[in-house]
Image 1 (cartoon, rainbow, N blue to C red):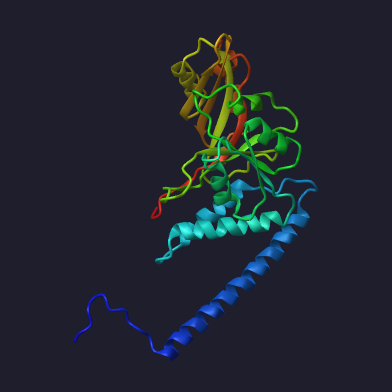
Image 2: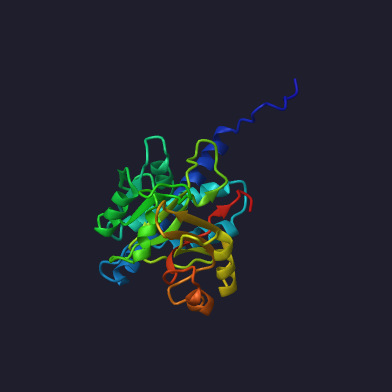
Length: 297
């Protein structure tokens, strides 16, 4: 009887043994290279400033992007991303404290799972019910970063954690990453959207967006803010405009294209400086590497 299409070919024992031996050899080579990589990471860490926060989300994003650019074959792209996220977590943890604080608003929210996907399955994490508690761990140096819910226009005053960053308290807390880094989400993967903050300033990657905070008159409109920012040279994709009941002050969180720093000349544009709608100069709250989009991109 001829083989059916569903028949599974069985390799002779000697061929199967040879292929398994080849896999073992490749595994040993990969392991040797991983150990060599860890030695180089140790040397990099030794060159860094004492007390430096061991977090480089922009550099990590570019590592994964570069590998995906050169990837081919049937091994899924998301597997490459997953493997290197664990590797980066392990080697970053070699350089110092690598505890992550997570604002888990409720048991089913999914922020812990989202944080583990990005920062590693074995990375120490502490859950907190409020953003202020999670940020407090970063400010005290007890956590290298905090994972916080994505800002929303209808959030409560206690949930609007980003407004506190406008004050630039010491140590200054910056937005440094956006989670999840991988899109689209597979079945069962956490669906929450989050931002990561750290006492380390964000580092530039090859594709970034920045977040700018504004303190405005409560009469300002989203259209007016968009016009002022566009005239100053910013390309704004999203503006969250938050008005507190009974307050003459509104706060805006603006997502703009590119990597913006405090020294960006657009921040001192005459229109921004003279706008009666702005009660104080804009504040750069941080930046994030744009997430990878698509398994086949």
